[in-house]
Image (cartoon, rainbow, N blue to C red; front, side):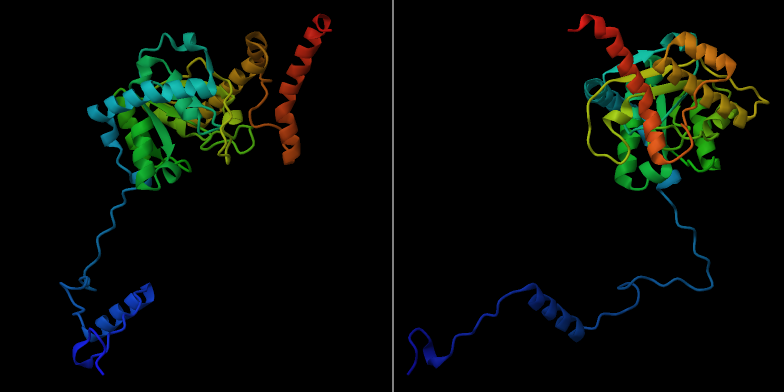
Length: 332
């Protein structure tokens, strides 16, 4: 008997479920049935063994070309973002107090701003408080192995901060030529001589790259001390705690033609330490210590981590105790 709706007694076809495994099996069977040619132009061409391969052109790291970030269109867009978005955000998060601008008021040339480094917030903060006459023609020396390891990061930091890739392990020929050309063209530079953020709040020994650039180009170095950014955004943390910061500009250091860059690097580190001493104490005490060569170093004491952490917080604990003693007669 013929089932209703099926003429001739044909049986209905059963539909197999379409699953990823079924699709992959069908494609595999198709590839086995149809043998495609394995030679060019279907497949990739082979390289003759007797011909040397040309070197692969590297476009990331220290070889990233950030020239486009200094075009008129990029500069206009960056200025808009910095003034309308970045600077107000920095004021909300960091509430910076700026000191020492009068020490560099007489300068009328491109300079090298060299600062201590404790947080990713340091560069945006400094870009927002550096005086306008240098800010509009300022580039930031960024670690090539960190900020320029992917195209997205490289383009982002090149646009937002006018960052230029610099090798932090050594002064390479590519980095030196790029920085020298920019400084000669009237650009100023912001660089962190420590080469990276502080892991524990204490400073790190300076590398001679900034001093070498100053000696090579003849541009003055302006020491800068930044205080408070680590409490807002520490290394290894994703949590932002709004707070207050202080940025102090120091007297510029000038390198002569016969100046040893290593000696200049030592002077720069001492100048930044003296600026930190101004924050912890006062200008007169810091000047006396600097003249006597007894300024506390920013690298902190030698010893285990707990001792360094305790020493880092001790000045603030002493300051809180002093304020409590001063307020005691008026409290009840």
